[in-house]
Length: 116
Image (cartoon, rainbow, N blue to C red; front, side):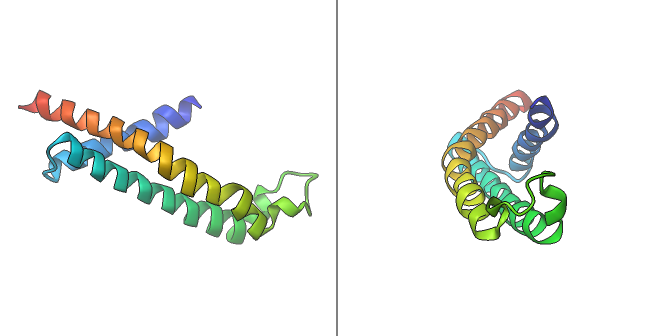
């Protein structure tokens, strides 16, 4: 959990805030909108690259827990219906993208105020 927070999410928030500032985005509302779009794209990339292409198509056998081979939960339709789509289209888009966008915009406004 610590790796996810400080090794993945924090660098993405910092990069997003700095890239918004360097791109000329000013104002908290515009930063939230840009941050939401950025985090939404990260969620879609995770859905299509990891859940569909990598886990279901390319390396399917590596992600199956030993002793659970043949379980119907690993099938594509069941996987997408019970795990991937609720996570990426509901939890990620409605809750986590908003939280990350607010954090990123807050950091961006802080950096703009510190630099001026």
